[in-house]
Image (cartoon, rainbow, N blue to C red):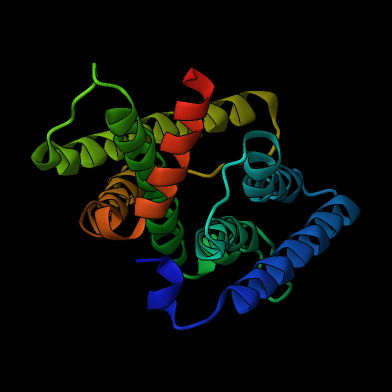
Length: 219
């Protein structure tokens, strides 16, 4: 079953929505450059690079992602980029003024990490006779994979914050304290659980594509 069957919109509309968000990311990047905002430039620039990964995978490796998955990835990086924009009526950005924005982006981002982990391991499991991952363990693996990535991310945020304070620069990633870190990990786990429950049914096509690519590389 493809993801688009559940979204209720066709591939054409999904591609259009993805394109609109990519254009808006370019606009946000331009705003960051004009205002000299390092945080906006870095976060939006990285986001734009991430949105090009589906096209790169298809062009260089023949791995074609479902348009809904491309939309999913683009939505996550777009919302993160929007979150770091400074609001003209407040001396803060969306992350600081909208309490649930950070939770939403963490859940979305962690769901993508979970999907990548699941797809990779499931494809390797099907491709190689030397690798076997019991289906009952897949849920645990996805949760552990995302939580490990989440911890690394929080350490990265903390390190960048310390480096910014030491050099007198503005941190490109913001950490708001211990409570924020714990909540980030909670919402990371929520994204992981969603994919662990939903992934086997809706990522089958992607697993098949990656498995086919691995088979082609091995032959």
